[in-house]
Structures are given as structure tokens and as C-alpha cells.
Amino acid sequence: RKQELCEGSFARERSNVREFVLYLCENLSMREELRGIIADVGRRPPKTLQRFLNEDESSRLLEAAKAQRCNPRRTLAIVSMLLQYMIRSRDLCALLLDDIDWAQNTITISASKGCNQRVFPLTESIRYILLDYIKNERPNVSYRNIFLTGHYPFRPITWRSGLSTTIRRVAREADIDFEGWGFGCHTLRRTGATLLMENGVEYHTISDV
Image (cartoon, rainbow, N blue to C red; front, top):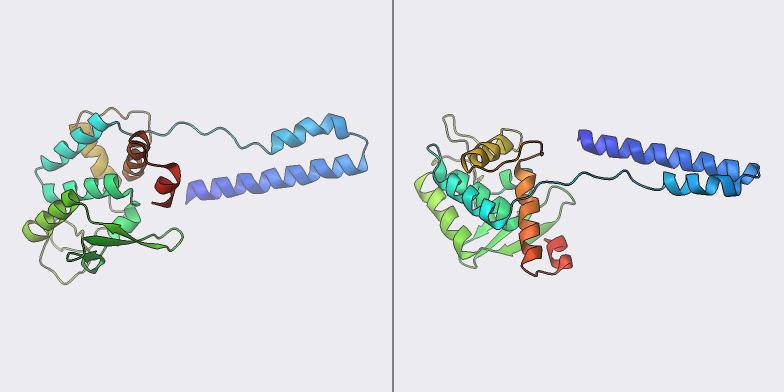
């Protein structure tokens, strides 16, 4: 939210400066002198590179997730979903048992950003991982959310309840160096997209997902 506010403030400031410079151009004979300023005002500040994992690091992260002492099946399911479906953390937390069609091997993901609803194939690996978690580790409670807290009182996990902290802990145990980088759930979203790109998937397909 803070980043969105900063970007919005920058956009408004840029628009105001541009309008003022255009006013000077119209009312003063300064077109040549101000042309460069108008061009500069239209440029966005450069963004820093964002961290993503390569295939080896992704494999180590999955192995570290499976080796967790507490709730390893849930951790593996979360990491796998973030990597394979490039799902946002809040959308992951909102997933319900009813969103999975076991007969048709599909999973419906509702995006909080844009309010879109998409149906994806349930891959063989994700199907096994989710079944293993639901049958053998997920608490038997009335909540329909797929992912629940690991300790009593059991309740749905929230995207603010430390998902990124969990991902960072698993990354440290996988000996992944992320010091100086913003690292969390969104890192795995970027990683999934990058790995698809490196494997020849077309850009518009990745963008659609």
C-alpha cells in the first residue's frame, strides 16, 4: 500500500510539473529551452533489479520446505503453489477447498487485483502435494480455506500473518543468499515467471497468468 501511494504521489507531481512547463512554453518564448525539461519530466525513475531464484535455488527451497520440523506438508504446498501458479500471497490465503475440482483436475484462482477468476490445470505434482497436506496435516475444522494455521486455535492463515517470514526462514535453511534484497512471497511469483520465460514460454502467456 505504501509503495502504491508513493507511485501515485510521483505520478501527480510529474503531471503538475509537466503542466507548468507547458504553460511556460505557451506564454513565454522558451520552447527550445524547455523542450528537454518536458522530456525529463516524462521519464520514470529507474527501478532497482528484483530478486528471483534460479532452478537450482528453487529446487533447494522445495527440499528445505519438505524438511521443516513444523507443518512441512503445508510449507511445501505453499512454496509449490507460489512457484508454479505465480499466485499472490493474499490470493493463496483466500483459496478454498471448493476451488479444487479433483475430478476435472482444475483449480480456480480468484485474483484480488483486478477481480479476475481463472481456471488452471491441477498439475500432477501439485495434486499430490495438496492431497498429502489436506489428508495428513490439515486440521479437521469447519473452515473451508485450504491453508490453516498450524497451531490451536486453528484458523485461516492471512497474507499478513507471516507468510513472507516463513519463506525467508526456509530460504535461509536452503542456504539461499538474499541479503540486501526484498525477499518473500512475491519473489517466488517473479521466479515462476522467469523460469517460464527461460523455458521458452511466450511473454503474453506469462502475462495472462
